[in-house]
Length: 268
Image (cartoon, rainbow, N blue to C red; front, side, top):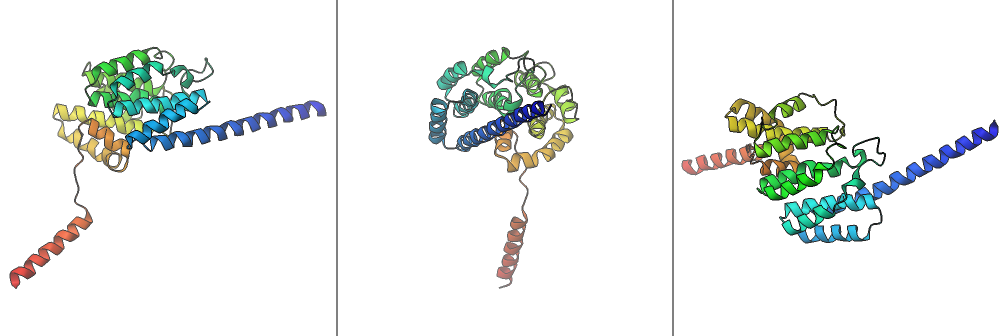
């Protein structure tokens, strides 16, 4: 009995060591990937670092994760020839859950945010419908695998918005903002981001309807997202949304000083 207990404990110890080692390795790769993404505003540096990682990295999963970021860079900088080449080479299978029974992409939801949201929205902004169709064709092969994920549903509803078909996704977005998404798989850390992105689309629809009250309500909700995050600023800009500029306390103080100086000059 003691021997059996020792064997079990040893097996557990080996498994825990493996888990710690694996998580540590992923953490290191995540930091390297984020360092590349941080260079997105420096075009040449971003692509040099992304290309080097893809060429040198042995971890096949992270090669594809950075390949998705490079595809985002191609989209952002309108490198259309490279976009087509890199989209064709992208191996999405390596980003899916390794267990075929557990459909989806749990560890790589960040990559699918770019594939399902960020890249399509940028292509919509650029009016690059042909490239968006190529992306749709690539992603269609994973419709069944990812049909229980919230991002896949968001992607499908956003397509209605981009093409202004059916209700342009309005019904779904409204229910999403009301918290009706329990039947889908999603990252709790990213749900706030998804809601902000979709509320921005809803704001556009309200604006097109001339519904000023609901549009203003959306804009109030989006102020922090569109002011304090780089992604939010870009997303709102791509949708043609301009946040109202509010006079800061500093501006008010300067204005008061200016008025006082003017009065003094008039007195003199």
